[in-house]
Length: 113
Length: 114
Image 1: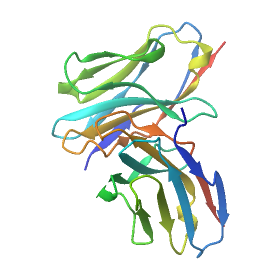
Image 2 (image 1 turned 135 degrees about the vertical axis):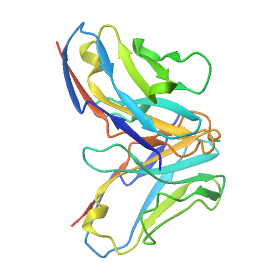
Image 3 (image 1 turned 90 degrees about the vertical axis):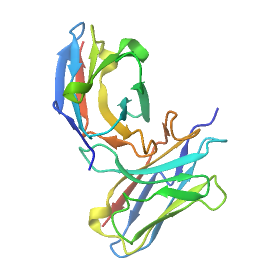
Image 4 (image 1 turned 90 degrees about the horizontal axis):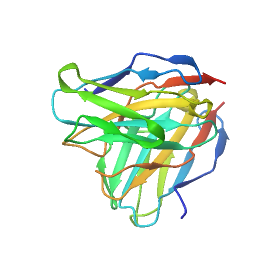
């Protein structure tokens, strides 16, 4: 079956611009997660959703970052006024409930020039 | 705050050698523990997990890990590695009170020479 998909696979933007990253979870998965992975580091938790609501957004680094999941399926991570330090691979994962295995997508590589 | 430490950043082994990757976590409460693997060009995928019960956990591809509560450790082992085990390995933990929040270590790159 289809796994977690993320679009775009690569995004290059200029400092100060706004970007949106999309995640399509596995069908039927109720929980959806966003992580950020910088070069040479492990994934860093950003936020997770249980259904439509954000259950834990403690990992969002500042108010430039925002994520939504309006219908409990697709999610969008939004970054305003991008900075060079936002350059990383943004990973999305989904699971059936939060105690089950998280299935990861291929990630979106964001480069801020 | 919870944290995970992986002692080895880069490990190079010959085929058939034994593997042990160290992982320690920092958290005072009950945790769930995981090892994830990322093969070159592929997504992160689960190798094995520990929630409760037998502290020796067996995963896919002959990997196992042992949870030692007194040492806050969850080391990954494999008796005989293969070239196809070349990958990056991540240890991760979630507090049992917040199972949605995976905290990852910085990863260990394993290179197996044929």
